[in-house]
Amino acid sequence: MQVPAPFEYERATSVDHAIGLLERLGSSARLVAGGHSLLPMMKLRLANFEYLIDINDLHDELGYVEVRHDEIRIGALTRHRELLESDELAEAFPIFRDAEKVIADPVVRNWGTLGGSLCQADPSEDLSAVCTTVGARCVIRGRDGERVVSMTEFHRGPYETAVGDDEILTEIRFPVRGGGGSAFEKVERRAGDWAVVSAGAAVWLDADGRIADARVGLAAVGPNTTGLPEISAALTGRDPSEELYDEAGRLAAQGCRPDTDMRGSEEYKRHLAGELTKRALRRSVERARERG
Amino acid sequence: MQVSMTVNGEEVTREIEGRLLLVHFLRDVLGLTGTHWGCDTSNCGTCVVWVDEKPVKSCTMLAAMAGGHEVRTVEGLAQNGELDPVQRGFMECHGLQCGFCTPGMMMTARALLNENPDPSPDEIREAISGQICRCTGYATIVRSVRWAAAYEADRAEAPAATTTGGAP
Ligand SMILES: Cc1cc2nc3c(=O)[nH]c(=O)nc-3n(C[C@H](O)[C@H](O)[C@H](O)COP(=O)(O)OP(=O)(O)OC[C@H]3O[C@@H](n4cnc5c(N)ncnc54)[C@H](O)[C@@H]3O)c2cc1C
Ligand code: FES
Ligand code: FES
Image 1 (cartoon, helix red, strand yellow):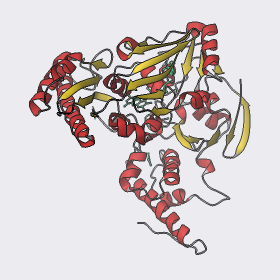
Image 2: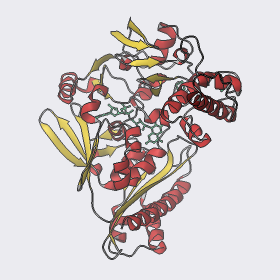
Image 3: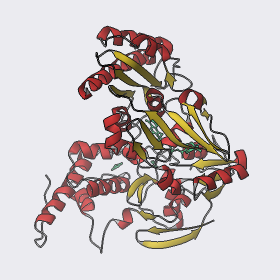
Image 4: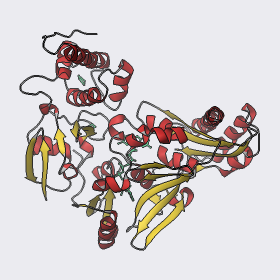
């Protein structure tokens, strides 16, 4: 039987209360959101904390998807299921619905949260790849107020983020621009499993149908989810074409850093990184064109 | 610490350790052994119960986290001594063999039907995709849930008549 080591359980009643508790208890305390990453680690005793601070009562404060004309804001306690079911979000950035359909399974999606996914910083986390792709910025709150960091700054390494011991991730934000399309592709060994490799793409077309900007984010092929600026540089200003997707796929396969493990060999993962990048770009362009 | 929650409509309060998982609270503290416990790693789904009507893998939730919430287990599916149509469907269509996965399957199926009274076989498969039947009786589980959906549709049409349903 797997049981976490003993700890004290506390419930936060507001974001400020959570920060106050974290400040008092320091690194001996951890927030628990959905618990679907933290509790399995604590059951295996890979993680031990003296205090767990349950933030689920903050869902009213931190569970929301706000789609504005120029920016989208999503609260950290928004659950996978809420991301999946948001029509407004799917309309503006279909990459979220694509990804959420294949993240874990419906029961896990009832509880797992956006914030927990990003803060877990597992290199295979699909939502991190999505956030990297859409150019999300993370809002981190502490006693002295808020700071906003990019996804590159947010992920410091596997299971390590920019969130300090006495801070909480409250929101992610990303810009909405015209002419955009996005998509997510994933290969897993069986339904509900973590990715062998997954890839997100977002493309913005200008009035002439040329690529004004393009972004790709990969998961499970390096120490953190990987954004590939060289792909953005190669695609910007070009006309979408199969040759161009091939070129981007080659850059993805070369630029990532997968390891051989039980999910596949390094070679196979590079192949997938290339192929999934191509598919995600192709679908993003199709979607951008459909929306006009 | 003390925790209070509603389990199958009854208020319970117990002294527990913070680290106690909901599945063990239900089985060992309350004696509700209908909820099974299998993989212990949130992969098999035999431990699925509802918290505020949403299915959760209770091996991956602290009992403390369910405090103040409404929990429903397989013991709470039957109402007034009458089996839930999902339970009847599993009987009619051989939805169980060894029965190990059954409580979790039935809780997920009931939640699905509450949201979508007429799910397609694919929608049923998707709903139970995080749950494992080691007897591999998936086809009959899907049929059982379809049976329950058809039974409930019949009953809604002809509320007074007693109907036997019938496998769709
Ligand atoms: C069976 C199974 C399959 C899965 N499959 C996939 C998959 O295919 N793809 C995928 O991407 N994920 C998958 N997951 C992970 C799932 O998405 C988790 O729900 C998610 O990783 C963590 O979210 P959570 O809310 O449960 O976080 P928790 O477990 O509560 O927390 C995780 C970490 O984040 C910290 N944290 C949480 N919220 C905050 C916050 N607001 N501010 C600061 N720190 C915070 C916690 O302290 C903890 O360290 C799977 C999980 C399971 C159990
Ligand atoms: S025992 Fe909970 S999912 Fe298997
Ligand atoms: S009936 Fe035996 S595990 Fe499903």
